[in-house]
Image (cartoon, rainbow, N blue to C red; front, top):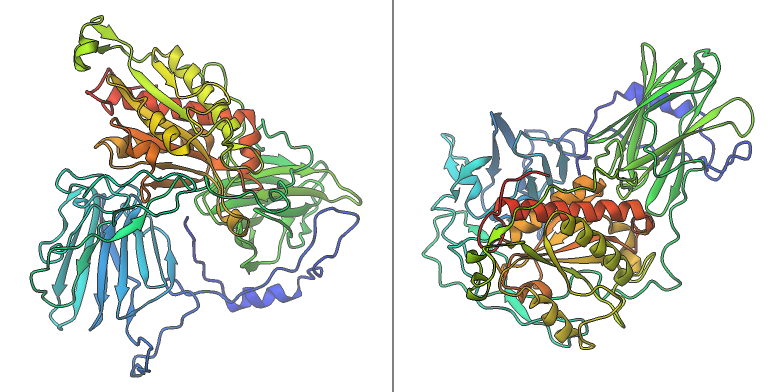
Length: 625
């Protein structure tokens, strides 16, 4: 998620006071959209929201229990695809470095981390976030312990010390020897390293377990401020291992949150129009500020447009830009509106006006928003209604041609076990598809029931792969479980990856408890270090599902030991295809077009894994969809 910080003059802010916004709850002309007076906020200085720089002639005051030293924001520069980030290190500060799939996290002690959210620092650092004792540099590619980054410390001529971080997909080395002596285990979210072996296979964890099994803690690169003695032999830190998130979430009291209201006249199977025009002749009328309607998980913005107004909607990485012609507008900015709409600003242009809607996540032509031009309810003003939610996915139908996967070449039987070697010279590659739950175990229950949705998606995945020449084994093809005992059921599913099977993919639906339901939406993929190639399989699945659906990407996860993955002896991954507890994502899961797109994403990821070597025994042919 990227946030763009914009500077506005005090004149623009003062100009917003007299816009005549209606009071909260006011309804105009029977319009069902609520008009509210959004809260206005002062402008922010780039890099330090809400914090003014201290005068240089003042000495910091140190109070008991209060940290006077500050950490960040960093300086940055780029050269080609490499990005350098430099942090000043105040006296007494210490920190740790944790490489993950999303970037590099710094946990800071001895200094206050200045709260900051900034955009792109360079081609290899797409975002910087800081606050609460942590600073995170988001990268567009995963980091391993040694791949994709380098870290060193240096002392400047004036005696100041700095931390120098270099990022680039082709870089290797990780932390310098001086900083890397306390590397203990594999970093959470990083690609497994052959040089670092897991301690022991953690116990299987099942729903309803009364004890908390353990596994090794995520790896951390610990960096002392001064030269450190030779570190002692590290001891294993433990974290609980559980089922995938959502499997033990009880249904919300009173049922799930009500689904988000749809725009009248909108067909979700048709992408929203990116441009249009109100019938009539433009007269250059002055627009009123947009009206805001808020629902759980979704925010609606309504622009009242006079006759002749033409509009163009431009999705982008920071939100939506609405370009209008044939009208005028008073410059204005309003901030802190809702979780889905961070702020909006209005600007006059030579041909009309522009409204910039800064959203909580990127938007694309088919995801993150919906729009419809509605006729007047009274008077002559039409309404351009725009719904905003990061959970709004692509629900347009696939064409028959899009559902065709290129054939996956057969593989040599000699690459399998001795039993396979006695069969034909070449065999179809085999994969196991595991629709979670079944029978008396419904899984997550909300807008949809997990066991029903995942079986439906698994059958679609199987049909796509079989048509492409893949031998598909389903752990279940009906509403049943392999065993009434959950522990046994999970073990049996994992062990269906028999000798000669290339991949194991489990399909689930996520959920969050009622208090946190609005924070859970989108797609995520889990992997465990059961096989060196499981993380790569997970990445292929996540990328393809997100690309096909436009769903919000929650990224790759491996912080929990999942029995259905841990017990598998082949590359394995578990895909959470959405959240049944979310009022918008739940509607996605109900939609057959969304399920088609999820199935195509999973099948495409599996095919890509098979033809590029992410299998038990090597590649099976050329890549391509």
